[in-house]
Image 1 (cartoon, each protein chain N blue to C red):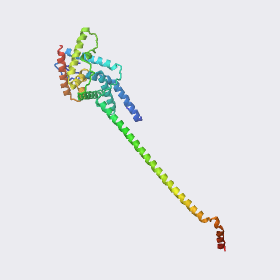
Image 2 (image 1 turned 60 degrees about the horizontal axis):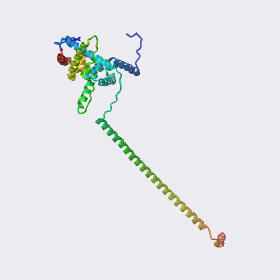
Image 3 (image 1 turned 90 degrees about the vertical axis):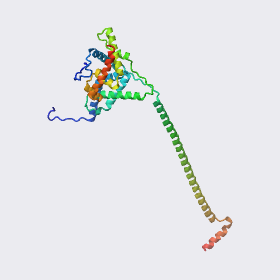
Length: 192
Length: 141
């Protein structure tokens, strides 16, 4: 509550710009690692994930003034990241006649990154094998299923958030997730 | 994270998969992605400049060459036109100067002739001077 007689000092354009820039910087610092992680798990390519993350925040910066806070900044950024990723794969498909080299790491390498914790060597090997199988299943998923699966089980977003990010209804998200999980289960089931 | 249901009560997707083992596998998968991402994110970044000689680059070069050649040709053409123009102006000036000089000399000639005529008409040969004096005396008379 404002005290009586207190005049509201109007903010000049320069101060408003500075405030917006500071706010954007805070958003970048908070969400950049998560956006990078999602893009890394989607592409299994560190360089590509970095490039797409850069592009994501560049795009976000350009449109920052238009962000009205109808969704959370994270949802908004994730939507941009998914669209960039889609564009990237679409461009790759369009360039099918070109020899395009992919920097995606193979499944063995991707499965290497597992904190040892308090596991025995045997348990670690088993866990790595399991992770490798999940990567294999993820690789075989459709683009949409993969995004939804990763948003759910790596980014730990709920169905409502995933629906907002992907622009799909919750029912559709649920159906895609169910199919994705079925495939992962089948892949992992080979080991069970 | 529960596979059969989530914190928002989104039960049903994989409701038949209340499977502790699968949960553990997915947990390991997430831990693996987290570890990889953290390591990759905090690694020192280098900027790699990859030069790709694709058709776009070739087309760009060709276009660039055409532009340069065009501007050079245009420049030469422009320069030639300018030279031609300067030459024409110089020729015109020379012609004008020549005409002015001719006019001046013809005017001088005319003046000279007029002066000569006057002088000649007023001058009397020495031999005729007594007669001329006589004529002057007659006139005074």
